[in-house]
Image 1 (tube, rainbow, N blue to C red):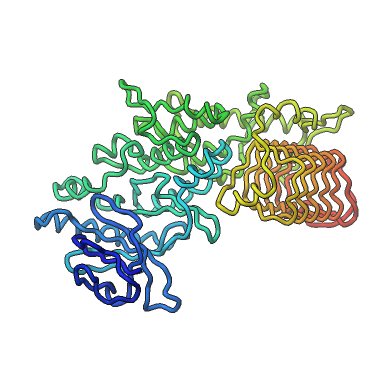
Image 2: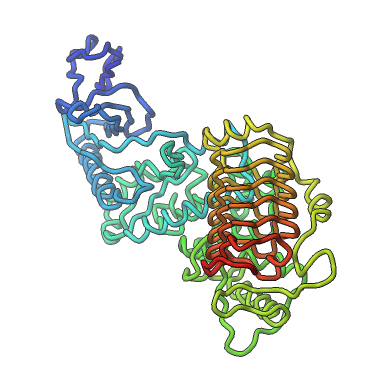
Length: 543
């Protein structure tokens, strides 16, 4: 089909390869190369269309964004041109990031403005939630670990997106990465002086963002980088409970979004993550996280809070400096500023220091690898290693209905990555690709995952008792506190995997590759190894 871009056309649909619209006579081949196939969406100031670029081999797909003012007054037309030029400049400036669509072309034709962008094949997060239901807490953390660096990059280019929401986040089919689209509401922080002019104020009124996702200062035409943090926080709430801002209540006195009761009806949200979300959603911009770095830093301290709840508090030794590590962000990020009702970075850092100091004193630390060890004991549970009995009793109440093997593979192929707390025991998942999937607190007892691709998957606190993981790719997998008792891990790739506090009693690690893995000799003493087992140092040998 060829689609006519004339806004006044009574019947824009035309047969393929027609040169002129049969209803209004307009030329269908835009700029003699782009043939529009169908509309994708429409807003108050323009519309987007799927098109083919007929000048390139294979006629690849692209997105054409048409900015069309509804009024004909000269000043409105000039505002449209400024908006068009601003978005083109921004896309050209930041479009080299792999999770931002590239700008391919831009031009003006018959008083209409056109941006041509890379077409991202995939589903929006809005559609993903509607199809698969809400994310778990671990799924949202994974989402943040992927999107916060993108936001960090955009802000480093002095750009505020101003319209972050589930409908503007697409999971790309090609590599399952999230792509942030629709930069029509961006604000360029470089030209702050222009923000005070009446023309600029009138212009930004057309692209203020989406109500509910935009914070108060953005609605008041004074967006800052932290405005995108708020919108990202609202997106997290949608992912957790599948409710948009218009479906939630607000405190009439403070304007605060009342989201917790809705989320907790669906998810068992940890107190720490709830506090992080509250700070992302602070109405007062001064009390909110100021940057993506701050949020990443708060998430980076997560591994220490479980021990904090157990009362593991002690004074740090002189000169001790914490270097918390987790899969949610780099260790060099700046800490966020504290505020009421939110996580105080200083207090959490001190708690982390105390925990690390206690572990160092009671358990011993390998200064070169940074891996903390614990003393072996005659008890069934060595140190903090969980037993399969503990897993069976403590996690059973959180486990969701059991999926079959086909449901798991089909859901994953459609973009689902969150299988937290699922009962997946006894399934046959040989040689499947489940890389970067989340199995936090899931049950996979006796599950056959032989030869499966589980790269960078999250098995934190999962029960893998007697699971078959022979020759599986578990590179960089997160297995902290996982129960791997009796698991078959022969020939498995566990390079750079996080195995601290995992129960490896009776696990078969013969021929497994543990290069760079975070694991202790005490843990490995409980497992079966042979001369083909590769140590974390990269050398083979008996332990």
